[in-house]
Image (cartoon, rainbow, N blue to C red):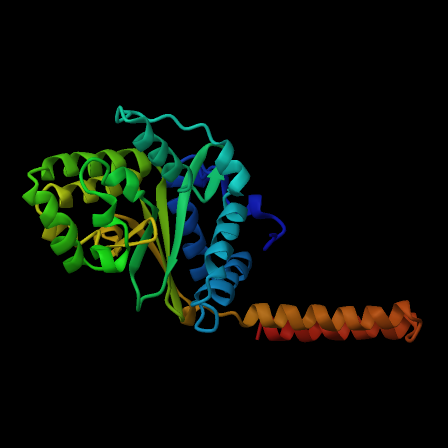
Length: 322
């Protein structure tokens, strides 16, 4: 992907934004720079913002699954990273900070953690998600049931996603959490859940809200994500379902709002952007290409070629500076 020719020049040296990004501050500062330059009608910023709107946020495309990959590709281009593929993830060397002591559980946790980073910048990784305002349910990715419930519930108790009681908050409480409490092992479950949260969520998250005529980008530190999950499990089952209310496959899901409240946000209202310059530039380039094509085919003499190009440029200047 190449949206603008001089992406390095887009970032003023005095801003101190690293490319490749080294940490979450480079991510948020880069996005804020895009916001500020778009607001001041910087041409390159308008090109980038127009891409994000047209290919990710607009009503025409925002419900497509491919928009998530589009945003990953953009981040890799914008902050000089690489989109992780299955080969990169498979080769990732992961060591748990505090192993559980159960090799099977640890293998599941390592596998779940390996799947989280979507874009990598020289070792620094971020997980990327895109959502629409009408459905702010977050898919947090793999969180193996076999590891979470081992020695706590039988597979017959947790095996099915919806029929087995893993499809909603009330079902989780009735069919999963309450039986754990009755067995007297809620503390063991809390400890296992916290262990998995601590070891799996090691990457920062970036959330793109596709609003149609606007988009919001939230950047959330990994420590805040762990803190919020653990705060909710340390109260009671009802409170936990405010952030984790169902499984889908091996993925946990829940509302994103408690998390984005703890993040930093950049919002761009596309309706406030003047993309007219881009349209004028595009039409001017096409006119010049058309007249040059005639010259190559010897369908126009040199004098007329110069006159036509001067005319096109004069019209362009008139539109830009009118």
